[in-house]
Image (cartoon, rainbow, N blue to C red; front, side):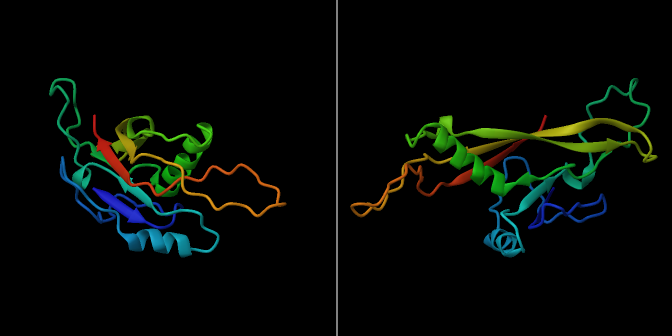
Length: 173
């Protein structure tokens, strides 16, 4: 289950209805309106956020029945979101580190771990969180054509890359 929101300060609670139910192997395109509304927020440098949890908070049954006294464990939405603006900012940092050299897709991958708090049926007992690994894939990062400076102007080295296509792959344990 995914919740999409433009504000990083937003916190979905357990009862919050998911914006997207994503099945294993499924694909979801992040809406452009999310990116636009995040950019329009006063003082925001964000592009929107994605919170996640297992579908309806139900955890896969991985416990040995003899060891699990509480079979009604539920997962809440992730305690922190995947921040789309950070993924874009990381691309600029990667490009700067290579001093403007092209970066192939396999070297441009980064990742983040997102954890979902898990509580027992009574709501009191918290156990180890349910974690996702989110892989951020990028198309090749290449140098953008740059304008030539006029004679006599001081030129500074600016590392500007061309457009990048992003893919977020979510891996559950």
